[in-house]
Each structure stands twice: as C-alpha cells, then as structure tokens.
Image (cartoon, rainbow, N blue to C red; front, top):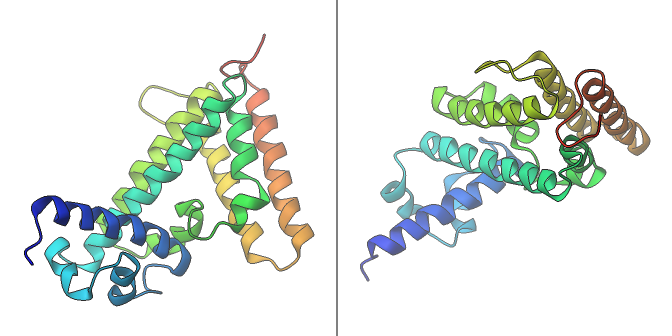
Length: 201
C-alpha cells in the first residue's frame, strides 16, 4: 500500500525521535540502521526514503535531542521563576538525571562521539549549546551582547562535567559527591555577582 505524504512525515518524525534516544543510550556507532528502524516500528528499507545517510539521521537526531533537553530546562525554570538556575541545577545535577541514559543530556551522552562526527552533527550540538548558554547568561547576569559570558560557560561546563563524571565511576557516594560539588559551585558562582533573575535584592 502506498504511503501518504502525511504518513511519511509521521514516520520520519518517529525515526528521529527514536534515534535521538537510542543514540544517547548506545552512541552513534553503537547501533545500526536495522535496530534504529525497528525501534520506530519500520523496516530498514524505509530508511533511505527518509534520510540520505546515517550521518544525516545523526544530525537530525542530535538536534531533536538538544531541543528536548532544552525544553526540560525551560520547564524546570518555569516551575520555579524565583530561582530558575537553582531549579535547573537541582534537576540536572540529580542522581535521577545522571541515571537517565536514553533521555538525559545529549552533551553528556554523546559529547565525545559528537566531537568525532562531521560538521552537521557538530552544528546540531552547537545550536543547542548556544541556547543553553543564552539561558544561563540571563540567570547569572552574564550575557554580553551576542557573545556568551564566561560565567555561563563555566556553569555549563561544570554541570556537564559533573554528570559525566558521576556516570563513569562505580562508587555511588563518589558519584553523588560530583553532583553535589557541582551544584554548590554553580550556586556560589551565580550568587557572587549580580542578583539572579527573580531573586530579591
């Protein structure tokens, strides 16, 4: 039966969504097209009707993963407008987020992989990282025109690094200490300068 344009678009979105999660769990090279398509309920033969290559899908899936992660930041911030940075840090630097292999931060899950990919994949990550930095810059009053400020860059680097380190050690206490130390560092850095958005003078 011929697939309609609407169904084809729906199938494409399903593949991108599934790939954005499975790549985070297995890495770009840790899962093949057959299993990616199976995860979306489709056959491998349908892949090339939707994407030019696995690299094309990797770029699309990376963009989707970063967009999903950014929405989680936005939701956490909206739930606590008096302290948006604290809310995001509490969620991001939690043991629950550290344990999320399929839905957690794509920078943590795929950062090293992305560094070995082509410019399309890197562009997807760069766009998402820029969004993170813009949001953090507002919260730490560190935005400087179109350029991300150093406080925002340090905060993001600290948070990403802490979650990564928390995942690669066996010692659960050490894992938690990385997250707690990062939370304290981000909070201290934010309060050291201008008052954060929504905080009281």
